[in-house]
Image 1 (cartoon, rainbow, N blue to C red):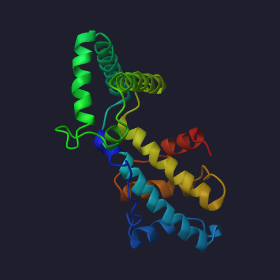
Image 2: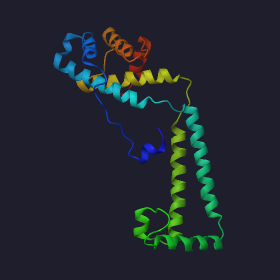
Image 3: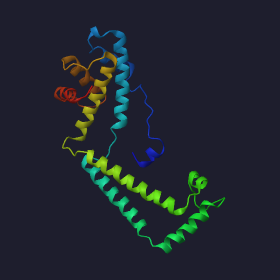
Image 4: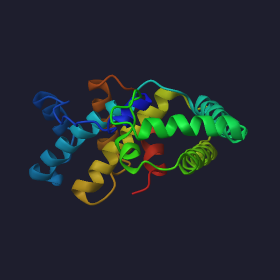
Length: 215
């Protein structure tokens, strides 16, 4: 996923048909009859949507350590650019300001400028200060995010498996009003679901994820 994802709105359409009718029927046989057929059907639809969501968020990408390094590099680059702009001498800035005014006041500028810039036509010095401040704000956000990322030795596949268990557990909470039990039926249900989408879901992983999940 790239920056273009966010530029275009950053969203996924969820298709709740990931699990076929036959697969949902297989899973239904693993659920206790006391849950009730109506709620079971709702739960299985939610599980199918959970699988869709899970597949959308389990794209290949950077590890936590890689993320920290990337964000550190971005912060350095952004701050370096902001500092470079601040070091421009007065004559250079005046020259750029003249060309800036020519662009924003031109009816057909040679550079594709943002509509708000063409509409507001701000003074160059004011506009430049805003850009530098935005860069510093961006660096601050990246630094904050970097500080919240904790590198871990847990494998990507295990993290993804735990994400799937959480999504299904939240679906259970939403339909039945309580977290799923640490019992044979839920472990068997998750093991079967995992086999349908080729994800290994062991009993220990399922139960430890339930213990760590906030409901």
